Length: 392
Image (cartoon, rainbow, N blue to C red):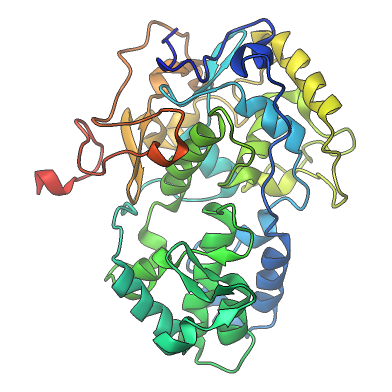
């Protein structure tokens, strides 16, 4: 097992009272993240009001199914218990029986997203994004700087989600402009959720407005996994109290591999068609966020054995259906570059686990206690699965 960071902020253990060991005897509370449920509902409703011809164009993006997939109910104590088992150096959950993680074929099966194609690797400049935002929202730069509440509509960290919706989907605009805004909100409200709860980053306008590739040719599933890896790593640090990313993917993945954690009155339905997130009935009520459930999940995870894991939830030989899942290297979402090492979890591919190769460490990767320094240099990778500007 690889060692933890030198500062000792988090050192996952394969067994024992892992929570107390990780958090230095200071009890950690349940993680949280502001909901995007209303946004997903509004997007789903907007799509349903369009003509048959326009719906065909919307569905051609291969993203329009996402708002209807997102869980209305997230089990925060369960998510928190698994985050405590996350090791950023390997991007795996360290469990009593060994390592396990979310792989590319999980993203493909659970969310129905492609995991091969053009990489989402460009980080557009602020000026480019502001101009694209002005055009998409039909607002001048001065309009974007208007104060709404206590903050302006436009910020580098994101644009007020309600204003995006009001200026594009809630008014009579050209359909192509509405489609760009719709996909902007879909991506920001499902796969790349931040912690703000009310802002959506404008970076997706680069792929929607400034490239020659159709939006459906991007490997959004791979990008979403890289982003989730980073959010899990950040949330596993000492002092973190919230988490971002596509948490429907994480919770559905837990249900797929760990039957003991599946919802009491909502098991996987008989229909196993993709995307499988839609097959889980998690209910629409407000889940309990109490610490007692978190403590119970910690104790249950401590006692888990490999016999309780559903290692092949999608059937035998998953890599035959999703070949990219066998890739070993780094996956990327803009300036986020994360190691991807399925050789550490080959039981998830139907094989016997052997000794994995050396951990992939992107050069200049930082994983200290200081969350603001938890960055990866986008051009400092020593080995990458996709073309890097340094190799151009």
